[in-house]
Length: 424
Image 1 (cartoon, one colour):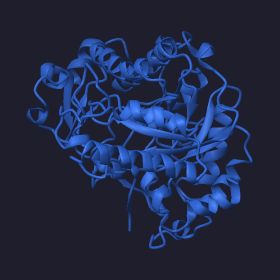
Image 2 (cartoon, rainbow, N blue to C red):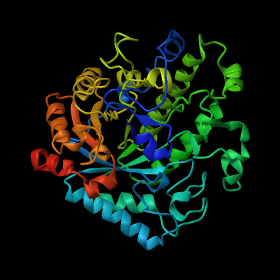
Image 3 (cartoon, rainbow, N blue to C red):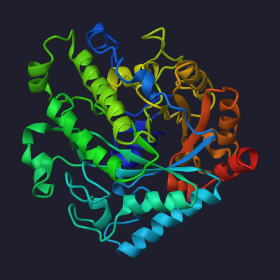
């Protein structure tokens, strides 16, 4: 039996499944080799060395708080402002109680905002109605209250996802996607901004940087939403933008990687200019490429590779120093047949070694359940073994736990075991 992976949890997509121990090691998505096209055009020398700032001296112990579809917070749409705030503060208090020191709060889940943005509407996940003022400032409150508790606050943005449906008419009047219909591509039951359009790339940066400029966030955080994960039988409809901008590239894949590389490189420099103290980090799907496809890849047999399927050359972002930290989602147990945690941690440690980029391991607390069909996830000691193994590699500077709901409930006691064994 398969299990719905983190992407399925966040997107509500029944087709996005994480693999079992005998299956593919990824949600249903795809990728491609690092061709000379994009790499030859963008050496990335602009901000690499400058961006490598020293990370926190202490071990990073983070918790993701997902707002999309009420995964973690708010618990439902339309709660009064006081109840929304109380729920958020309770999560911050729980992070402190669990001896964590950072929270990663999703504040731009679907081309919307959890702060009073002049560029995008208020998020529907607050009030149940996109564009409706919730009566308070969630991001501003989160930053202030996190800092009051000694927690870092990393603002989590999704650059290109517009909606979890394909009807632009359901977006609030005046939404940028309605004012610029040529920016938007329906795919796999969702709407996305086209990453191939320079004006889109500029706009999404402006939308995110509005928050970075307003609030003293400790980090700017992206997850694995770049080009969408592949959907069987469907083609992402960027043919027009490829015809206009991709003629000099050897393949559409090279051009797509160039687009995402450019987004990362530009955002890196702009975050540093707007808020030098904020650290820029990405939490990608955990496999860059399988070694069967690329000798530089990991000893895995994952069904999805970020380079080839999401057009996200995550390894390059590390080696070029465009990011300050990387938190790969290593959501498999030790000994997994296709993507062994014990093989991926050393691979990522080698990848960041000498780059100045910190490595935080994304951990699948949400999979730990006494009723899981995977024996490892039924074992309360599995995640403690993860931390012990990761600490054998000095490049690993900490962990991030997905997600807040399970940090609160800890269904099979796995986090309690981590705290007892490692967070004293």
